[in-house]
Length: 121
Image (cartoon, rainbow, N blue to C red; front, side):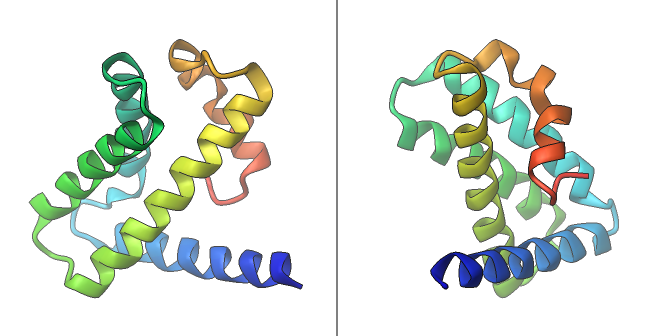
């Protein structure tokens, strides 16, 4: 029951975030994915602490969003929730597939992850 509620919530957040990011003037959906993968790679090189890595990636994405200046506080909050979920899902899937030493391999597995995580286009 909890898993079903979680999946419904996840689907709702993903749908909202995608809609928000696609509706911006510069269509940030694709660029957001690029920043997430770049940020993960950079964070792997800079920190050992998982929380610091996640915050770094989240900050990079939100910096991109803030530069647009078109999203209100609620939309930014939805995007932030979405990015948190995505980072956790990516890291969990990558760790399951190839272990914890994956920085250099993240980009190669993006398409493989897209097959497993239905909200990556």
